[in-house]
Image 1 (cartoon, rainbow, N blue to C red):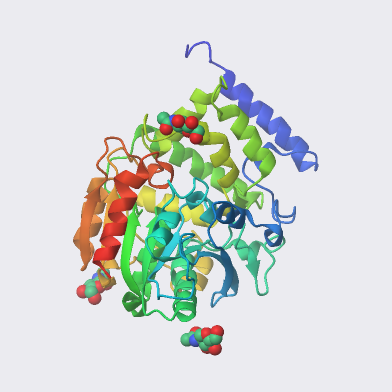
Image 2: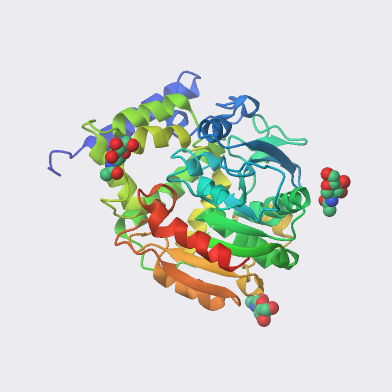
Length: 423
Ligand SMILES: *[C@@H]1O[C@H](CO)[C@@H](O)[C@H](O)[C@H]1NC(C)=O
Ligand SMILES: *[C@@H]1O[C@H](CO)[C@@H](O)[C@H](O)[C@H]1NC(C)=O
Ligand SMILES: *[C@@H]1O[C@H](CO)[C@@H](O)[C@H](O)[C@H]1NC(C)=O
């Protein structure tokens, strides 16, 4: 089998080179087709015309609101809100505790909404009496506006990582929500790097400790101690060289939502497609093996709600944290940029022992990205951890926190219990 494939990779690369050569003449670039458009080529989706999250929420019968928040450095972020359950008869009655969601890498609030009230946590929380907000990271398709920069034309717009999301965006978002709801503090639910961002907020802005009643950290990427798997080593190695290549081509908005690309991947990966096993091998080698929690009939639908785009610097930051095992800001490998971003050339580390609000840590045994060992170390550094929780299912993986078939029974119900306990 392996012998039969000999020579294919080099031929494949040769074809890519040819396609990209044509691209450099303005015809077609395979890299752009896969990764995203160069700055200056336009955005695939105009954020102002979008209301996918709204359609999802309203089609499930729940009320929906859209809000916009401007961060201190001018980024205009879109928040989605489910203010109450559809079963609620008197909308103006009670004060509701606030739950704020932050999605993970390349995602948007859509990933928490598309499976509906029997599966998705935001609806379950609304039904349990919570006022639910979902934030969208700067640079995703909902949050691409800026007071003075143009995401379509200015490379400067894209120069941010998780650092800015934690330092500027979460604080602005939290203040906005607390002001709107007249609450003193909120529950924060972060998946993967969404949770990472709140660890950054907590380390850099201790004044926000009192505003987070409980941070529920679902497979958060913070410290990485576990031995990296072979596929992860290959993936990281190739991603690092690919990243240099795409930055050099001025492709800074990576994996934006593009319907033709979603359909293309959806066709390759759908049930019944002979190529589906390749998609599954690729996916499981990244997020962890799982035969049972991932329902492959969701693939085409999932691909219409994921990815939603991010900055290449933000994805690099996540890869840096994973590769180094250390929790620190993105090293731009350029003293001037580092100086401009962090007011020092050597990149400092985040000190999570300054996070005094309660944090609960959640992991799955099948997750190869964030493991029990990693979270045990993170927990040991947190002054106010309320515990590490194993999902009671063998092989529960990184993605299952978002789309696992039984995530409601395995995780979400317990999260709601934990939140109720911290009223
Ligand atoms: C809260 O919102 C009101 C009106 O929307 C605004 O005038 C006020 O400055 C805000 N307060 C804070 C602390 O942001
Ligand atoms: C997977 O999803 C499809 C479509 O929603 C459903 O019909 C099927 O029963 C699901 N399979 C499992 C194992 O949950
Ligand atoms: C981190 O913060 C803690 C608590 O304030 C402090 O004791 C410790 O020295 C700090 N560590 C570093 C490396 O700055």
